[in-house]
Image (tube, rainbow, N blue to C red):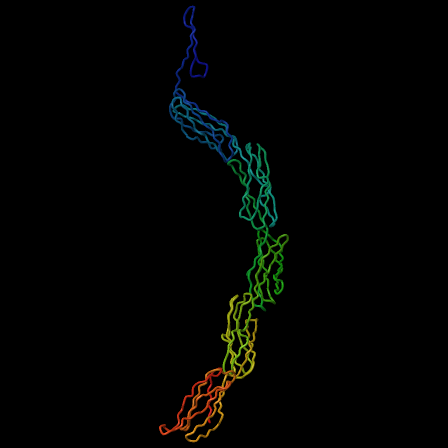
Length: 531
């Protein structure tokens, strides 16, 4: 008898005995087989997305008490697919099982066959898998776009199924450098085998330049990208310098530079306006400039003013529909001059001063020369004769006046810097110097020997004199008496002469006496009277 099945055991039915009655018997035979193993894969058909990977589990089973190490290897047909097992070998015990993972990946779509060969000693077993690699492709009808700043443009992005790809693809955008806005509509596209779909890319920017937009489609762990170059045509306008300063009566200028961006070319007109609108005149030459792609052009704006102050000048560069503006700050400088005090009173023979103050107006900066013009009879000087002012600063000089002639005078102090000139006036009043007078009631006096006589000495304040007057006497020849103050009448002091009578006990002769001090208004002066 021989087995007709595949089971490792054999069921046997037989009759026992040579004559009737016979006995029917049943038995199960286990024929002798050498140790072995088998290998199976799950699943045996795998779909892999290009650029990604797929797996199948390999199971090895011990047969007939097989014990040993089974080594795994792979054969791929056609080439283009990578297949590897992990672990690359499996240890089996009698009646046991073991597993390994088969990982497959490819960047090329197509149908592949992977044969896994298991070798354990002299025993070789194999299992075959069918692998399908699918993918999708992205493309655009316009790889380069050109727009004017503030405008927009679109490009159609097409996605196509490859190798039977089925799934949803998410679309995103990235822009370099920043300054451009890019969006997709719709943001995802679903594909079926051999189908295709589209999404619209919209770009816009208000800043000229060259940009790169990267559109990326992602499904699962696989991404494909496409790049679109976007040129945004525009131009820039700049000033140098952006701040201009000059003194009133002079002028200043600034250079306006126009620069092409993103391939812009065309004629650009220039217009200028000032704020405040009165007091400043602006003229730009030339009033328009022609730009070529990647080029630049210049114009010079000149400023002159009739009024000091700070102005904001707006320069507008226009090339429809584009318009750009820049500003220039214009400071028209001046200075002020004043005198404190504006009226000076002095006495003949003395001097007085007035401070000449100078201040910067509207950022004026420079050196101011000073001069004083005085009429005949009055001397006037300024020190220092020049003052340097910084922007917004101030300075001063001292005017000194003197005269020996009574009267009223007007001095003009003039400050000059370049074409700027300003004056201030100082009024000087010159009065007589304070003084006093002294007189005697008699011009001569006769006194008999041994007797006395008197004379009144009068002092009077002149021109507001106030002060102490010291009186002293001198006698020539010797033999007279001294003086002594007695009483005050109004603005005058009276001094009466007195005598010392001579007697036998006194020494004959004349004595000189200091007669004391008496106060009068203003200053001090010396006067002598003889009699």
